[in-house]
Length: 252
Image 1 (cartoon, rainbow, N blue to C red):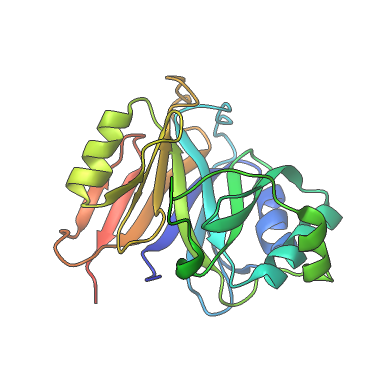
Image 2: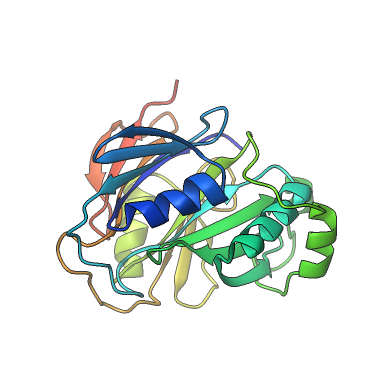
C-alpha cells in the first residue's frame, strides 16, 4: 500500500484530555507550537495536528463531518497490544469487526472523534467472491492473546483511511470519484460508499448515517486532511462535501 493519506487536523477544546489520549495513551510524539500541537509516531509516517480553541463548541454526535480516521498498524500483535493498552487506560470502546480485508477496533477520543485502529490482511487473502468488505464479529480473546502485553502505537503506524458523515452520496462520489479520480470499491453497504486509489480497499468512506445534522460554526472536529495524490490528479486545495479542506500534494 502506498502512503496516500499523510496528515489530518482537528480543532479541539480540551487540549489536556486530547494530548493525554494521543500522546500518553497511544504514544505519539509531540511538537508544540501553540495553538498548534503536532503529534506523530516514531518515523513520522503521518502527522495529527490539534488546533487548540478553548472557546470552540463541541461538535454534536453524530453530525456531518468526521465519522472516524483510521490508524493502520503492521500486524495482529500490535493491534492486540493496543487493545490491551486502551482497555487499561479506560478509553471509550465502541466495538470491533472483521471486515475480510482487515481487522478493526473502534474507539472515540475524549472529544468524541472516532478512531479506528486496524491491521490489513495480505491482499491475497482479501475476499474474492461477493463484496470486497463485510462486517463480522472479531475474536477479541484471540487478539488479546496475540498482543500479550499492553503496547503503544508502533513506529510503522500509518494513517490508513478516513471515513466521513456526508449529506449526499452522489455528491461524495462526484468529489472523490470524479474530481479526485478514486475508484468506488464497495457500493453494497447500506447508506455508504467506499473509495480508493491503487487497488486499496479504501482511502475514504462516506456514509449517510448522521442525516443532515450540522455542527455549529467553529465547532470541534475535522478541519483538513492531506493526500499525496497519484499522477494525473492535480495538486491543490479543495473543500470536500463536509466542508473540510483537502490538500493534494503531487506524487514524488
